[in-house]
Image (cartoon, rainbow, N blue to C red; front, side, top):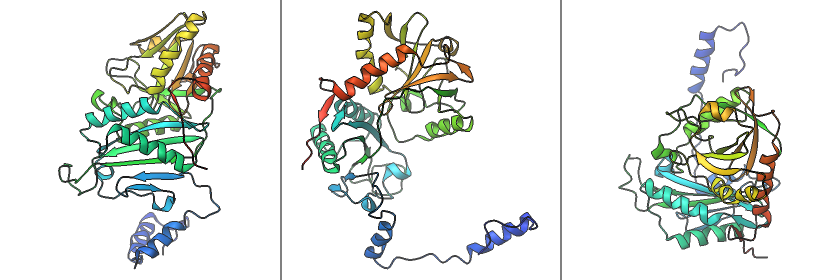
Length: 352
């Protein structure tokens, strides 16, 4: 085998030939049985390690699995090799599912746009998600779920797939109220067209490249601007602004994903208007110049739920500090998540 760290006196062409030649020396193991393969899969998940994915549901399996080594999907699933799938996420906090119904409704709207029919009625999908969360015993984290055109072949069309597939997994991750500001950039990665941006589909390569671009510049994430020069959204979150006149403005949802958490904040924020802290709450088209003149700026998303933004393209937002109104909105939304009395919080029926 060639040395992965060649010495400095080796010429590039010599290194290349050694690496090329090493391929001929590789002997690929052929698993003789499913039992041997399962044993290999289990090596990654030793009993001492914390399991980040406590439970998964698969309609292909027809049930819930608790063994992370078995949390797999077929390679010929069209969501894998063609990106023909949609997904959504709900937060699990303090033993409750937050905004599950709002997310599930958006999930089915996305599926309709992607021309994927659910293998189950909405009520069954909801029941599966609640039962999965209960089986996972997870009290804090996220619940993520997908509808796929399903497994069947490697063709472009899903016409040959026997049935769509439904998958879901619980993810053990901390959910907390963000109180520190972050830096963002304007993304140069082209944003999705409205057709794809308004459905939560699995084609996230533009989103991934947008975040990587931001990280390369020492920023947390990025801001997309549409072809008309108006503020759109972040790579997987909505964005909002507070003007110097204390107006809370969300970019219009016409060309971007309709964020469930952002829409919930739109419902809650008028309380601050009643208290005299905000002047108004609205959606509107904002240019980059108008947005950068804002007094405060924030990301809004399910797992954040509000993240203050204090620097954009190396320019401070307002005084460059986390704003009081941003934190007032954060407190309002956080209280709704942990102690709200509305239908947004669904208690999970854990079994002892």
